Image (cartoon, rainbow, N blue to C red; front, top):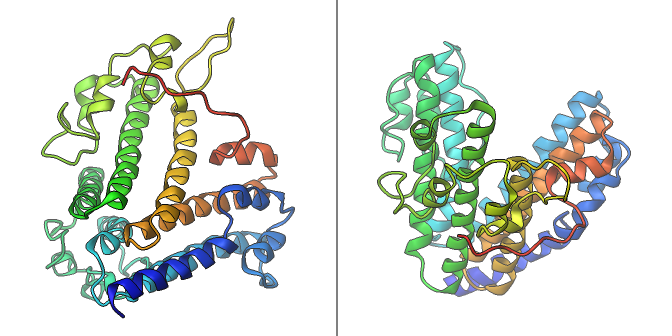
Length: 347
């Protein structure tokens, strides 16, 4: 299939899937389910398997994720020569697979762990288990060529995250046109807010020093400095007061900040920022998908919306199992009706 034909075919298929998905306003329906069996039927339009509740909750999450990955891979397969931006999106899962492999080898486990099936788009040679050098040979992770010690594991996992982010960033930058600019904007906000939330958590809960915080930031250039587009905003807030609303009210990302109520003690809330940003990314992803129907980058918009749906499904499953109030569950994933305040100017 030529590129233009593939673009049209993939968009039509993706649009059809979204029409039946629980994204945007339809996500609220997930939290109306009173049981896991009812949630299964809502999602998959079949009777749930007769298994214990614990297993059913696991099967719901696994099937939703498997359906998501399978659909995305089919989209890529529709192209004779898929754009790198589409293939590189799977590096997120390839990185998670490598983390699982490294952790299992570190623990001395005999068998290769269960990995996310990426079909022909997986570059890791899991059949070479337990030879880590052969597993990663010829891949972008070939530097990961020895079994990590326990104290090295977290450092190497962070290095994987950095590499994945840089590949996503570079592949978006290599695309041309307005769609690629919209995609780059999504990546930018994702990475920036991830860094900001990380900074706030480390300051609030661990009282960590600035130099140690900086070493934990993701970046897309050579280092997490003030010239890096995704690290710079986090560096700017390293010394901002955590209990004074005024600086944050004029911040570029003020629309994500927890509100201030006169007469009440206020403190910046990284969880609130994370939840609001989840909704903002979903909004931008929807715009990317529908505004650029004949561009491969639009499929990343579909991917992001379906990823949001997965977050909602997981939260709905847990809320049913733990008997959590539906309103609390929806709030946990970022679904709420409150209007968002406008952003500030103190970028």
